[in-house]
Amino acid sequence: MVELLTISFTWWAVSLSGVLMPGPISAMAVSEGARRGFVAGPLITAGHAVSELLMLVALAVGMNHLLQRPAVAGVVGLLGGVVLAWMGWGIVEAARRAALSPGTAAGPGGTATAGMELVRAGILTTLGNPYWLLWWVTVGASYYVLFSRFGVVALVLLFFVGHIALDLGWTSLLAFVVGAGRGRIPAGVYRAVLGVCGVFVIAMSAYFLISGLRFLTQR
Image (cartoon, rainbow, N blue to C red; front, side, top):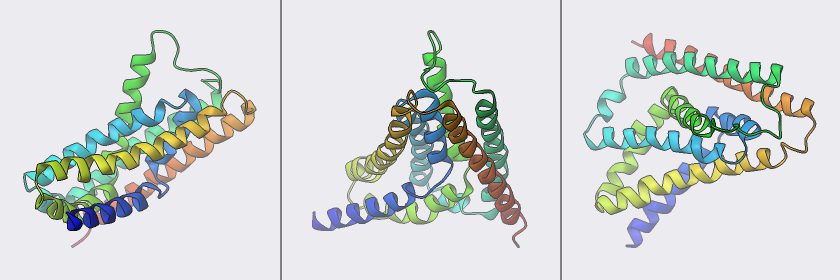
């Protein structure tokens, strides 16, 4: 029991260090929190959780050796770079046009559609990150092996749910803080926040594209 708790606390600490690092998921939480409010955080996290559940299944069936290949990381990086560039440009365009005012939500009849867009954004942003892939097939896989010694309940509750809870807390906090002020901040500041997030996501897309090419050219 003591060993399991020790492993759990170290895993959560390692996970938290990754969660708090600036990245495309955090940028999406801020930009969509400004546009749609607090709900953006949980919905983006839901998409992120779907991706990580797929990774958990991949580890369970022994695919970590395949996923460690540079060619796989390279393809993920290139595809992810393209997707992030598209998402970032959409955020920049929304900032330029002020397509959604700070005090407006998704609109009648569009809530479900907007919600699915956020879940899909969480999935694509996660799967398109080659460093997320490498982190999981190295650090994540190592902890998977440690937790697997304690059975399925430990894997599900302490390993997977514990990790996702940290993601949910952070993205929800970002979306809440930004969304809470969206009806009170000036329109210019609102557009600036969206613009900065959009540029950051585009910069991340360039980083992923370059990284993808590097992985593909490794010998």
